[in-house]
Image 1: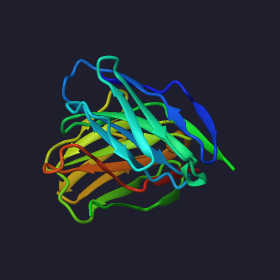
Image 2 (image 1 turned 90 degrees about the horizontal axis):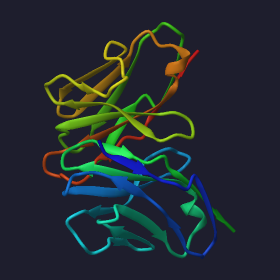
Image 3 (image 1 turned 90 degrees about the vertical axis):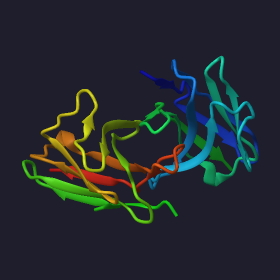
Image 4 (image 1 turned 45 degrees about the horizontal axis):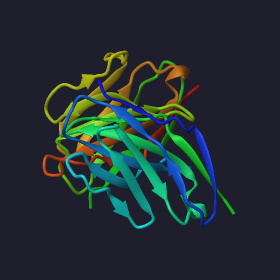
Length: 113
Length: 116
């Protein structure tokens, strides 16, 4: 079974600064997908970024980027130029091809003005 | 595109009654739908996976007779909480997957269930 671990229950960052959220996972699969989701107070799950395991290049989406270390089974999220609207719960998730998602416990990020 | 809706968004019911939650894919055909439960300040826990036209597959510890899942069409899945009790109060989220888009799930906005 796949497990996803987020070891930082809470993080805070000053507006305009950079913050990194950690995630590790355990799997015996070779092909899979990793995700970071944002869940604001509305509780709608919002996809932040996706990484395919077969791609060596780290995914980037504007201010969001990941550091994907396949051998170490590590998948961290870096948020640059943090904005107040980035305040939310962030979940790391693992998914096999056409399969269900497994989520980490989440990290509550607070961006301070 | 790829919009998933849930209805109702919030429901309050009395203990012992049944509640049905609908999950619809509005602009695509969902071959697989997933139901998650999220308790306050916790993560999403998978309850069951349903494929159109077949019986749902439940995660260990999830009571099949209590949480009835029906995926009768490619755009609709329903979760019925039977004989609800206060401990069933939670946030229920569905997600949908298509055969064509293999690397993503599309999430509904969730349903808050409160059992009095």
